[in-house]
Amino acid sequence: MEMILSSVSKAKIAEILKPILADQFVLYTKARNYHWNVQGSQFLTLHKKFEELYNELADDIDETAERIRAYGLYAPGTMKEFLKIAQLKEEAEGNYPDQFEMVKRIANDYDFLASRIRDIGYEVQSEFGDEVTAGKLYSIAERYEKHVWLLKSIIEGGN
Ligand SMILES: [Fe+2]
Image 1 (cartoon, rainbow, N blue to C red):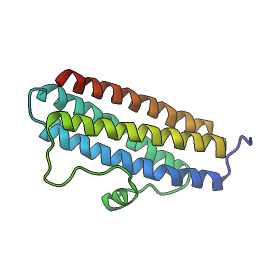
Image 2 (tube, rainbow, N blue to C red):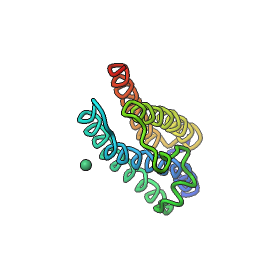
Image 3 (cartoon, rainbow, N blue to C red):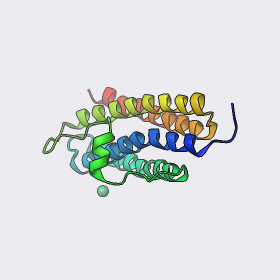
Image 4 (cartoon, protein in one colour):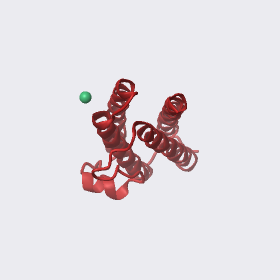
C-alpha cells in the first residue's frame, strides 16, 4: 500500500465524505428541533441531552467539512445540497413526536450513521490506504454507537 495519497485519491475520499457531512447536518438539525420541542416527564434530561448532542454534532460537521477542504474539494454548505445527498431524513414539517419517540428516532439515526461511517472508514482504509481518515471515522462511529446505547437506555427506563 502506498503511503502518499495522490490528489486524485484525496478528491475521491473527499467526495465520499460529503454524504457523511450531509447526514451529520440533518442529525444536527433534528437534535436542535427536539431540544426546542420536547415535552413530558423527561423534559429536563432530554432538553439537555439533545443540546449536548447538537453541540457535539456542530464540531463533527466542522471536522468533516474541513477534511473535505484539506483534501482539495469544496465542502457542501447549503441546506438544499445537504438534503439532496443525505440519507437520513429530516423530521416531518409540523410533526412533534412524543418524548420517547424523539429519543428512538435520534437513536436510530445514530445507529444508521455509525454503520455508514464504519463502512466508509473501511473503504477509505482498504481502497486508499488512508489510515488517518479511517481512524478518525472509526472514532466517530465508536462515539455514535455509545450514543445509541445511552439513548436506548433512556427509552428502557421510561416505558
Ligand atoms: Fe437552548
